[in-house]
Image (cartoon, rainbow, N blue to C red):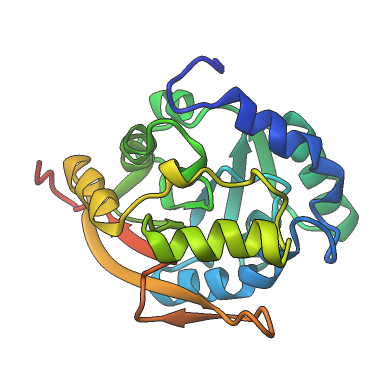
Length: 240
């Protein structure tokens, strides 16, 4: 395992590792992820087959989504480079009696040894934290089997997303800690779709995520102005 890949930002890893003990605090810094999790899980169940599938959750952090996937009957593996967050994920799964595996490894390193071994690969709220999202997409494309599915989520880059995700969430409502996001790393859907196609993937669906500022409830939306989910698939035959 190497932490020197251009897909890795040590400062980002350290940032989330420092908050590791609060991953499962429903009122803490990761409360938005807990509120978002039923929506993204529902989208996964709608777009892919989870039960009985071998599922990889890339950038799993404390295991909020990974554990949910295991509860839905997946043979789930979560990977991350934040060691403390993974420790929390393992302890929580053990406490809850959920069978799920975790591994500290870079996604590119896993792709070199486990190419084509997963039915479904997820990468949620991670791409906007890495220096080279296209490199991550390439690794995801290698990890999923032919005919398999990839679901990613990230944040669009425009004035509205800046106002909502940074000014609103970090400074006004303080629903996430200041410095969580870097606007320059937000990704337009067109950019993400282009990277996916370059990796030989098919774009199946793009759906927005709406956040009600008063209730802080999440819902799927036609608008991809701020947060959005993208369903990709690897064709059964190479189309590059």
